Structures are given as structure tokens and as C-alpha cells.
Length: 640
Ligand SMILES: *Cc1c(COP(=O)(O)O)cnc(C)c1O
Image 1 (cartoon, rainbow, N blue to C red):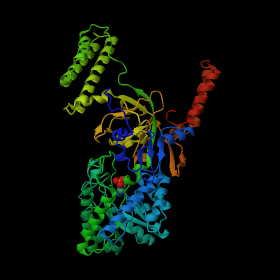
Image 2: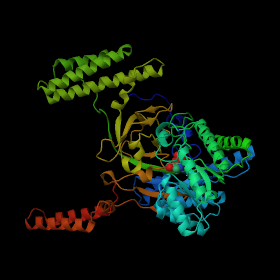
Image 3: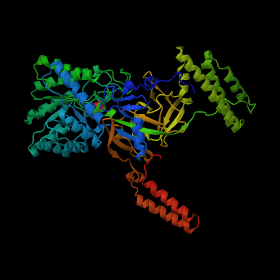
Image 4: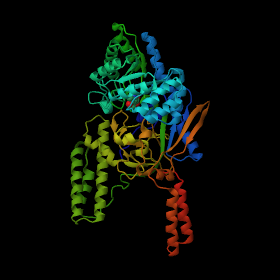
């Protein structure tokens, strides 16, 4: 195994290797004990935070099993403060004559305690909610009681949705119905007529400015949502005809998520400001400009324009928006609108950490070079000889030769001319040759010599597989669905050099349930993650920045259910557990697929009785099987 050669190993080396000061700032860092430390209020570096390893150890001692999702609601509060603070600052700096009103898109994480945190902590900022479906509307309607906060209704709507939103005005709420499709307008007009309530209307525009990367197609002509210029003009005329043009108050757009360049935001808000001006000139009162989400976060910690990064700060974002709207509207003498954003990812990603234990390791080849060969087959002799002839200046050719010999050997095995013992020797020789080539290639690479990527890619083949006690499909679905990369690192032993190169596998029986894309220490994607040898001790890994979207997108593949979750708040000198939300039991996940646990237990009982009658099972075995079955129904779906 190519080992990293930096000694003595320091905390600084771990910090650099896992880039925690890049993506972790200001909530995660390494403490003097070599553990990950959480500072939920984005504290100054001097103040002590919560020792994540100690916290997990305590929680496990209280009987909570891993994997464990740990949420820090104070991080949500801090994010709201930072986003609102940035807009407030920009508004003061540019003398913007209006205010900022953020809304939180509930779809990003609907967990009740988190939405409550947004509402409660957001109250001081008149922070609102955005709903994109009927269930989300009901959440927002029930929870949001902040005067002046907006309740933005996006998504496709039916009559029910619209009437509910309209009636919410009677509670003193400010529901804004954003038209996503032309057809919704007639429904709104009918409902308004029937209820005698004037709607507060918005239109979602399809901008030509587009995001980039994974979510780049959320805008543009072929986007799923939004109105074209022609549609918008039709809305205005229809409203005018109905005598309801005074209801049109908001212009909305959303050009996609995780936008890594502030110039992309700048272009979009510029284009939207022009539409806003036109709408005012057409006679709509307007008053709100809602620029959607897209505020990125720095997953790889590189502060770059990588799709997984973010090359601008919150302050840059707010300043760009405020200044662009101001300078675009000013020459037209149009009153600048209330600015609305719908940041989801930027608000929720940092708040949770998934911690799981490594159950097992599969070393790529635990076998050293054979000291003596027990076969005189020609391919085996040649592979053995090749091992001793590998040279730094012929690595590519050596590797090709090594593969040829292995392929030839496998052919001979299939034809029946090599034995299973001989095939095993070939495997061992091939692995040791590859390991030597990869080690030399890395040495060359580190010394600054050009090395073929194929050789560097050998690291994945040579890496050990670490089996984690988690389900990728339940806890990190985007890692599977869209190849998103999350920062992953051990939460302890950071004062020690990680000497194993690893890829991760989850508990599911799906070969896609693996992680082999990580951020390397240069911010580029690598296929292996340096980890420690657990050496028979519990070894805990943390997955960070997964607080947005992952929880609700997660599924029950292989019937691994929701993980245990806890909410942690800091208090002077420590922490307190504010919520414990037990993960699914086996009985619960079985009920999702229509199995009744009692029926299952009963069926097993009959089978056991029958086996007893026939003398196939002893009484104590029968009792033991029945007990295992029933205990398991009540148990956590993950490994103990
Ligand atoms: C999903 C969504 C958001 C949130 O986007 P982020 O990039 O996560 O901030 C905002 N607005 C709308 C309309 C959305 O669909």
C-alpha cells in the first residue's frame, strides 16, 4: 500500500488532508485531542466547542445505536443570522431603500424541529417559508405565525391548494401565490371570486440566464417551471381584464442550485430586474423580487468555481443582488422592491452530521509476495520475475506486461491448464506487482515527475474496502443518484497518520452502495480516502454537509430505515440533548411494504409448531428462534 510519508504526523496534517478548515468553517474543526469539534454558533476559534467523538461515545453509552444523525439546530439559527446579516449590511452599504425578507423552502428538510427552529429563530428577521406542495403548505400555514413574514407558494397548484392559501390571509398571514403555469391563473381568479379574497400574486419567470453544473437546467427555455415573456404578458392582460392587476405583487425566478460563481447570480438578477421594470410599467404594483435559491456551499473547501465549491461569500452574494437591483431600477425612477431569497442548501447543509462505525475491512490483498513458488507454470515464473524487475522509469510498460501475464493466466485457468492453487498464486503476484508499481508511481508523482493517470488510478484497486454501518440510499442518496461528493473523515485519531487507502461500502446488497469519490487534499476528486487501521477498535466516520435534501430523498433500499437522530444544543462547558428521534424498527419498515408484524410472527409460530410435531426442532431451539424473531421485529434495522 502506498503510504503517506509525513512524520511526525500533526493535527495540521489531518486538517490539510481532510480540508476541514475549508468546508468546515466556522462550525467544524479539529481539537487538541485529535477529535472533530463542533462549534454550533460559529464561535470564535478560541472558545471550546462540542467534542463530536466524546458526544457520540456518550450517546452510544446511553443506548443510542449507530448510525446516528446528529443535528445542531443552533447551526440553522446561525445560518439565518448570517444570511439576513449579509443582506442588512449590503442594504446599509448601498443605501438600498427597502428591506430583505428571506424564506426557507420547506422541501430542503421538512423535519418538524428544524422548521420550528427556522420559524422561531427567524422571527426577529421576519423570516418566512416557501411551500411547493400541499403537505408543505399545511406545514407552513400551521407553523408560520410571524407578522410580516412571507408564505411563498410555489409548485403546481390545484383549486384546494389555492383556496387554502387564499384563506390564510384571513389569519393575517401573507401567502403569495406564485404562478408557475398559465393555467393556474384561471383557477386563482375563480377561487378569489368565490371566496371574495383578492390574491397576492407572483409570477415565476423563465430566465435566459442559467445556472451551471448539475442543476443548470432549472432555467432556460426548456425548464420545467416558469412563464415565458409571452405568458407573462398574457397574465398581465388577463389580470387587467379581470380588474385584478393590483394583485400582481411579486416576480420570482429560480435558476438552479449550488451556483458556484457570483457572476451567474448577477446576470440572473439583472435580467429579472428588467422584467420587474417592465411589469411596473405595465401597471402592476409589484413590490417584491424573489430571486429563488442557488446560494452555494463549499463542499470541497476550495473556495473555487468547481461545481462542488463556491467562489463567493455570503457578503458577496448579498452585495451583488442589492447593488444590481438598485442600479438597474434607479434610472427608471422605480421604487426598489423588498428582496426575497429562497436559500435552502445554504441554510440547512451544515446542521447535521451522520456518524457511522466501520464494521469490517476487506484489505485488497492481505497476502505478501510468495517467498517460494510452488508451480513451474511459465506465466507464474514470468510474473514473479517481473516483480523484481519493475523500474521507476518503465512503470507504464511494466504495468502493461503485468496485466498481459495475468490475462494469459486467467485464460489458461479457464481452459483447464492451471489449477486453483496456481490461479491463487497469480492473484497474489499480480497484486504485489501492482502495489509496487503504484507506490513507485506515487513517489514519482510527489517528486514532481509526470506519471500516467492510469498508474495513479491503481490506488482504487489497491485500496481496502471499509464496510460502514449505514445505507447510502437512506442517508446519502445524492451520492448515488447524482454523484454528489460530501466531505467524509474520521472524527477521532486525527493526531495519527492514516495509513490505509480506502473506499467505502455500505450495508446494502447493492453494488452501487459504495463511495469511491472523495475530495483529495488539493480539492480535486480522488477515488480513495486515507483512513486509519481500526485495529479491532471502534472506528467512527463522519459525513458532513448532508443536512439539505438527503434526509427526505433517502429511501428504504434493502429495508434499511431512518437512522436514529438526536438534536444537540450547546450550553456553557458542554451540550444538552434536546431531542431524541428513534430510527425505524424492523417492524416499522416492514409495515411500509404492507407486512403486519403480528401476522409474520404468527406464521413463523405455526411453522415452528409443525416442525416440533415432526421432531425436527427441539423445544429450546423453537423458543430461541421465536424469541430472535420477535426481538428483531422491535430492533433497529442497522447492525449492532
Ligand atoms: C429547491 C428550490 C429552492 C432551494 O434552492 P437551494 O439551491 O437549495 O437554495 C428555492 N426555490 C425553489 C423554487 C426551489 O424549487
